[in-house]
Image (cartoon, rainbow, N blue to C red; front, side, top):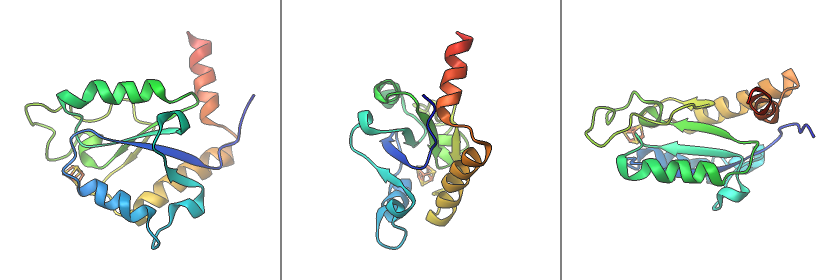
Length: 148
Ligand code: SF4
């Protein structure tokens, strides 16, 4: 059954961040930006999530955890790189334990760290684009399933 995306529940994984990105994520959930008013929220369980949001360059010790959280999110689901480190162009990219960021991102939010206004614009723009096109991320999963 096709679903229209109107909200996104986000599971955050810190994969080696310096915590600068977390500060901005915290600001997003506070009263100034209040992401819940836009149908966005950060949830504790991957079982309740639509989005895997990763901060940091994905270190050796966190790489397996990132993929385990991804596996625990029920489809349809999307991957989001939050910050330059997760995108693969941050200051830790060349560090000895870095995997160079999150692979196969659907949404990338640049910045070191990303500022809340920009983050909201990117996520809401992504939602609006999919609503406008009448497509859903469920369609992408369906396409993937058809191709396999
Ligand atoms: S992008 Fe910047 S703020 Fe975010 S984890 Fe990397 S160094 Fe820290």
